[in-house]
Amino acid sequence: MTTANKVTILRILLIPFFVVEVLYYVNTGNDLHRLAALLTFAVASICDGVDGYIARRYNQVSELGTILDPLADKLLLVSAVILLSFDHGPHLGRFEMWFAGTIIGRDILLTLGLVVIQMTVGKVRVRPRLLGKLATVLQMASVLWLLLKWDQGWLGRWTVFVTAGAAISTGVSGFLYVYDGVRQLSASPSSFASRPPPGPE
Image (cartoon, rainbow, N blue to C red; front, top):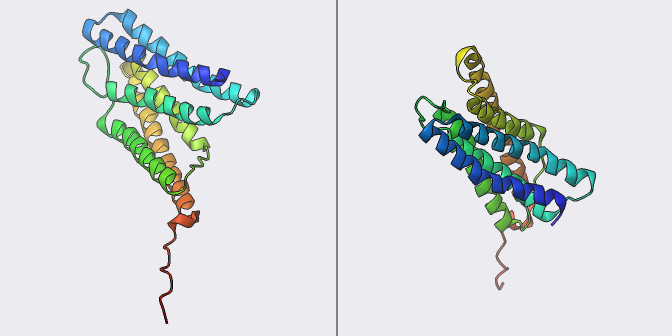
């Protein structure tokens, strides 16, 4: 249990608190709950970079960390996107369904792909891509944009650029990860058709 993994676990533990604070805000309209949700999400997002820095700087890269880190990202972002896709009346804006569908659809597809590769090859080799990291950053920015209520007024004009950038980078990075997965499956000996043993002459 390295320091980097402890930071990652902290990110996971912050997710239920974030969800509860958003729900309290949309039900009561008390701005303190929105600020608490905003601060919680911001801390969890910052910790995403902190645990990665600690792991690289102090050589704490571990098998557990390679599983927990993307899992924490997925749980945080998917829960936020789903939660903010519902109509919360006058209190908060909402994500368009195409935005939520792009993010959730990619994560479901990649999760299924990981399971298939794990069952077929035995070990999944995930090559981090800069575009994937950019997609994560833009998704986090989109959530913060709504929580800050920057989707209203003159700042609302930029909402479409933030969400569109997040959706495009998410879709393209998902395609690249699928391509990497197909290459892993193709290179595995178990993916080749086995020949039947020769019969008697």
